[in-house]
Image 1 (cartoon, helix red, strand yellow):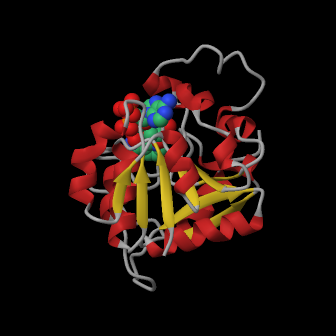
Image 2 (image 1 turned 30 degrees about the vertical axis):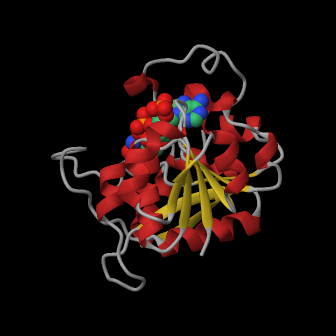
Image 3 (image 1 turned 30 degrees about the horizontal axis):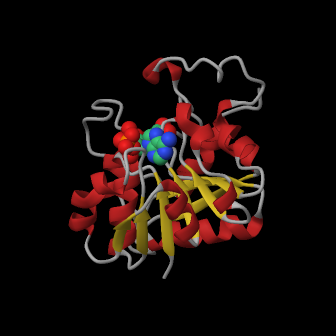
Length: 225
Ligand SMILES: NC(=O)c1ccc[n+]([C@@H]2O[C@H](COP(=O)([O-])OP(=O)(O)OC[C@H]3O[C@@H](n4cnc5c(N)ncnc54)[C@H](OP(=O)(O)O)[C@@H]3O)[C@@H](O)[C@H]2O)c1
């Protein structure tokens, strides 16, 4: 079992923490307001959970999930993450979140912003393509006919394997999309990023399972610009 640090413990972070605790992992949660504001969540998650500062969570994690608003990505503590595997869930979706000055103007594509900040970490994009409520409900045991696949992208093969093992333990198959830059194939607005949504009900409806075969077709549909 693994200790997973969380930089960000909101909708997606707390959902992942729940799945991780249920799978037998330890979690160290953090947010921007301080560990004292996470005591309720820690109590709900039970003895495998504790709260810390972002620096503390980064230092404690065998791997660390960064799951904060993209506008805050430069506040992620880089030094304690040196050499570590970091899961990047960040999406920049101006249509829904509004535009962030300094991101629009920059040279770095939005899906690579965290990696550009954490140059000495092994960044793997994952969990960015599924709505947190659907992530909470679509997990299935290995081999189940309706098990869903989630895309992962990263430049370090060992880090990607670590993340794939975590994803498997949480009830999903990991689908390797390739290097980190290929995470553009499941960036906001792409067919793969919307795959679990029922078009009739979108975020209000239950999520739909997405097999690895279907995910592969959707990823292919996102052509190179
Ligand atoms: N929600 C989804 O279904 C979903 C799905 C895929 C990807 N994503 C992406 O995942 C990220 C998180 O989404 P979310 O919906 O979970 O957001 P959220 O509910 O607003 O939670 C954001 C979390 O980040 C923390 N945070 C903000 N600034 C921080 C900082 N400087 N240092 C440490 N923690 C900080 C917040 O803490 P405070 O409350 O203390 O500020 C909060 O715990 C976003 O980039 C989003 O695009 C979300």
